[in-house]
Image (tube, rainbow, N blue to C red):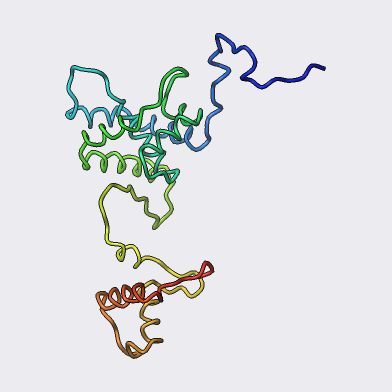
Length: 217
């Protein structure tokens, strides 16, 4: 039996059939594409985005492909356009989700930035509302659940902290901080501190080096 060689040491094939590089697809993204196609997603976003493009000039990223890349970033927890572009380039199943041909390049992160600057926030909101409505009609959202599209808006951290619940005690963050205030003698058990007082106490804890939470907590 002859010894195998590394691929780099062998002469590469001049032509490769596209069937050899076809992706089997991803069950989630394939299903999502079918739902979007049934709902007329691409025609909807193209009509929505058309006023923001010139009729002449080099063709930009198709709106349907641009928003699919944003959906990939959201579903996979990728918070940068560079990361989204890299992830799509690295996955044959995601290339299939984007309707990219075998020899077609994934849009560069700088191209995503240009499209994002071109389209106003209202357009992005309408597109994500469209996707959520499709999911709602197909009963893919649980009652009381909430999907959030994240943009570049800076939010006050305390607004998010209010929603945190400790798994062991079931306390919300305000209840947890209030208990700490009682334990340290800052307030009495009958006192009801305001949100501002809770924030001030929590902020002072961090300055004093007391704001430490174990991995278990």
